[in-house]
Image 1 (spheres, rainbow, N blue to C red):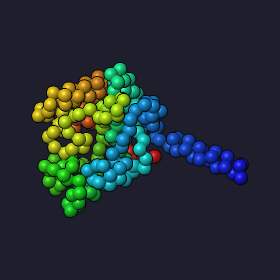
Image 2: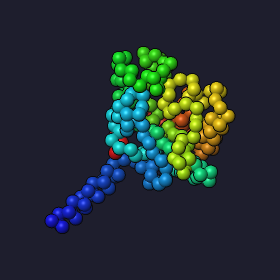
Image 3: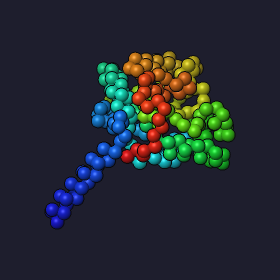
Image 4: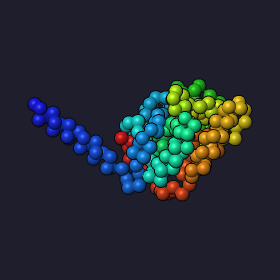
Length: 224
């Protein structure tokens, strides 16, 4: 029996190791580069605008291109000097997840999450207004959705709107914010841009690595 247990453990370790070798060349698991980064993949939960776990998200783990991980480490190291930390809400996103969003957006009867995520936007206008598209930069592996948290309490800094909120309060240039909210957004924008990322004007949390390695390739491997 003892030997069977040992063999089983060896097999499990071998399988886990093998899984980590299946990433396409140029991709890495984020915690292999940034061990202390906080990861809370919202699409591996029901706390998102769909209200379901999204297709392709099999575990709560960060996957990005290697240059993106290296750049995020620089951001993390700088924030650590202020006793702050990054929290990742989304990073690499399989195309099948985008397809899930498309199917959901076409189902106009499903408005379970409207009050929390898109109270002022009609669901039938999500495509027209650019909130849902047939492809996402996340599928190229160098785009991340994130915020800053207190390293001690793990509480996110107040950015003035929730993550994935569809509407003007999420725009980078939105001005109807408190002084502390403006300060927090400015800190996030400055530290990310300093280390090689460009923002997306309609989402304060969304950044893409400048000079991303796969600018025209959309991947579809699952997150596991």
